[in-house]
Length: 437
Image (cartoon, rainbow, N blue to C red):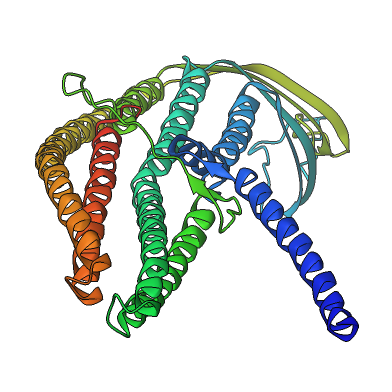
């Protein structure tokens, strides 16, 4: 007896240790469940706008625009040029007559000049301001184009998000099916042990559990693959244990299209109008002041063969009175561009309307199917309850029970799939329309 207790004592210690370890594992897993990350569809949209590489272009466009404007503003600053030259002429100015007692020395054949020229724009007919306005319009158009490109990524976000969500829902159903099978397996094993059920009835259930394990592997691999793609798209690392929130999405059939593309079309037309103003200002009169200081031989007095300093100052008025209608033709070309943009907007609105009609049809179809799914599930639940009772009483085989359990699982899976597809269709509808979920 003592020897027996000596053998059992280490086993008791090991059992207590294993119990503690098991308790710690369960506690750890429980904490992990509560510590799981959660992610919503709206958060994904925000992260794409923030982290996608294209978003950096907004700041780059602003920097580029600032440099362009600073360059344009230099038109109002004094322009200073330095010039120097040395020449040799084959002939110079000489008087064709000679005067008594007067000697006029002609200029040298070799001449030298060094000048500093200063030009100051006084009035340019609003050309500089028009150029600055055109650059402002260009910046707004460029940044709105970035917004449009980022917005179009929402469709990819929707596709990946709801793919992961569907896998998440399927896995939850599979867990429930596994739990049901394990409960039934215990009862079947007891029945086989006491001879109330046929031998190997439990083996059929165990084989089905192994198939479920394979399905878990497949679902987990698919989820990881989609999570990696979504992670790259939104620019954030996402844990494999992520829990995606099932969004409550509503749609409004009465609201108008509110896509950023519509704003882009308007900004493009505004930019064309700014370009028209810029072109119109190019032929306006321009007034500038100038001053030149120099040192050379000869100076302004061509008859003085010595190095001299000199200067001149004045005003200059320039006006392109006739340009062969070039200005007018450029503005007509811009008017054609506005008509092209109007046509592109018309095409966009038509295609968007067609797309919305497709989404509405899809939403209506799935909604009707869901009603049918719920009726099927109620019937399948009743059938399974009967099959479960028949299995325990040895009336049907385990294979027949698994068939009915699988039928219920597939019916529930269809309902989850259709619910997710409905949310996906609604999200796409709102994305296409430009409204928030």
